[in-house]
Length: 278
Length: 278
Image (cartoon, rainbow over all chains, first blue to last red; front, side):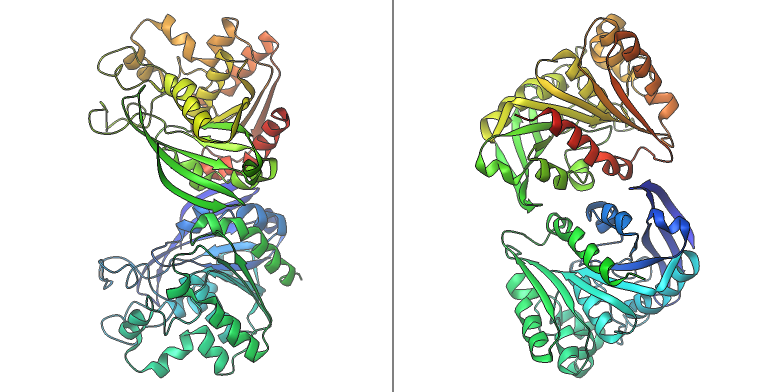
């Protein structure tokens, strides 16, 4: 693991690191913020999964999470959203597929199956690397994300409910298997058999019996992707049927951007920190 | 004036605007954050001047000012750092001169004098435009800035002490007329007569009798530009001699980046807001 940069911020250390990933078979870059409390011993860790087109840097630059992470004493880790680089197949004309659009799944279809293994990367390889190299308490993990990353956070929490103590999302894609901006990518990554898609669809996972103690979701009501891509009411319906408590805050006037995310980041970190207490 | 973008954030509106500037004879882009209190009437206004290489966007993306601006009810305006565009003479190989490096002065030397008039732009043209188009109380203005923009904030406050109720800076260039990264630009913008440079040098202005009620400065002690470009002790000495109260916080371990600025932005906005009260 190579250190790309480190800077003191809000009393902690914002670092950027790079490593050769075995899962995605390419160099992967990720950001870790360690709060000041990490100097005294392991701290809980919050995983943040970003949305389409993003790298580790978007939330690092615009997410405004460090003040709250330092206050509550939680580490904040932001992976990239896909494999990248020479040899990684891409579709540069489609921002909803390929580089920047890994959808946190393991592709099974050629030529994507070789590198597009973000599920294994964010659920196994990166946690192992972070646990080995940073003072984090892996018995206290939470996860959150934005848009495609909200989808990632929800599906990871529903798949590994014993691992994460909290899960929240900003404007998540709650049913990617039927959304116009994600279903075509699912077909290319996973093939045409839609049964295989259900493991990467939060509402389908809930329908199929997966459970998580509770979710927090913030959704801007001026979000231009609200009706086509996000459709929070589908999560609301699935959670209601399954008896999963969902706090769904519909935020009038807010859009899909980091101007929205940063507004409610404090709330999400405080909510997670409450559940990550020792 | 054209609206480039508007987004709700922290309860207020983060906008980006563009206009054809008479002073700099080119289109200029700037950012205005209006706190929620602006819906009820004019609010105080804080001017933020950015450092070398920046546009309006750097602090807008990374400055983490909106939460505090919303809490205290102050508008936050961020201009660009120079004229830009076709016809504006530049030196693309020098990041310390030309586009992104206007140094908040009016150039007197050809070919720069036609466009490089950032002093007139930030002290006259933009304030008039903002006063006309936004609900701001121009009797309650404060100014702050970073690095080259800290230089701008200090020199504007010392020149117009009746206009600004507060002035603070992050890692300012306190004596640009003798600093290695600014003196060459001063020569090209203002000519070789160094007497003309004193009007754009905070320590020289203080030596020449200009006064301001008090300054707040934060300086990272791991700032790689500390000794060559910034030299806060020169401001400390000038203020001590002149009897100007200076709060100079030397911050161990912090560098020159927005990771540093964003850490102390809350403090600077609270400090300004206290002085901008009705």
